[in-house]
Length: 435
Image 1 (cartoon, rainbow, N blue to C red):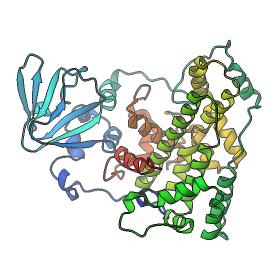
Image 2 (cartoon, one colour; image 1 turned 120 degrees about the vertical axis):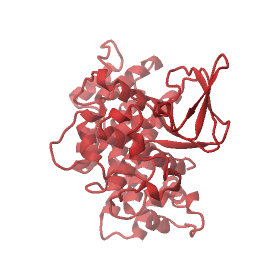
Image 3 (tube, rainbow, N blue to C red; image 1 turned 90 degrees about the horizontal axis):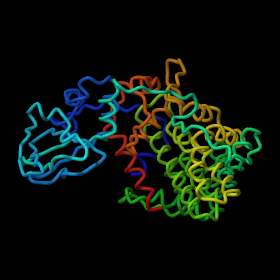
Image 4 (tube, rainbow, N blue to C red; image 1 turned 180 degrees about the vertical axis):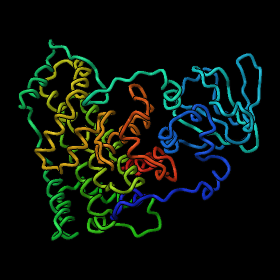
């Protein structure tokens, strides 16, 4: 339910999970089981901690199909319980039991798949992990990684013979027009941060934007609230969601509408870029909830939401000049190189807290190291960006996990989420999908 992700409370530290408390995992899956599987039996500790935050368990009945010949899918599977039947293209069959040494390897690892796999026992449980994650661990010893000081992804030089060179020139001269904060969002922010403001004041401000008001009511009446009192007023919605959540959601909804274009393809790119920001924000919030101190989940959400705000500014600016849609790929390259700089300028213009700006400045650098004992929000954003890449099964360019300082500093043995972080994020995002 939405209260799981958005509620008025201080950040909490998740208690260390005892796998025996989960019936399905009582004897099926745990950190110890993971460490017996290849390649996790030779992986660094932080890699296994990551794996415990992204796995899924599948329970299949006898003869259910898991994989088919020729598939080139994005997942790897391990047999944890029961047995699996492998059927080759010529009809030959073999059976793997969960107690055998073959079960310690991912099933039919090669792509495209060389075997059809069906569940063979009466109770069959399979571990599911992203293929890119598993293959990255296998390849880490032979992989060389180039760190970049400002951005996770580097696309090389942009052609100087481009219309979009104007954008880069404006950026260099500091003349890029910066958007003003949405009026409703700014008023709500000030009211939420003012101790003298009450719920009625905040609701009154929101009521001046019908679209945002309707979305906040919808959020507070998620289907996951079944059985609870129906929320019918904005005041009740503000009370249920809490000031921090209301402030962040109003920023999200209003800023999403701030950028516009008459070019359908650019509009689609706007929306997909902003939706990606919401995914990042939700992951940051969930991670902050599980990690606890020193992170506040609401601040983490804001850091994630605004992390690539510069993308939208550049897209808006480009829409005023672009004549040839073939230039779109160059816009993306400019965004990847300049987004952090532009975002920082916008947030300075919007008077956003310094710690958010710091997270934006360094959160895109795998090699970032504050050299402080405790992690900060920049560390959290590095980890969040890693989870976002895993969420979309995109592993190219990610260095060896043990060489990401923020990862080692932020995640430790106390980080034991009760379910996959990725699954939690999917559930939370699905609640917003209808409104």
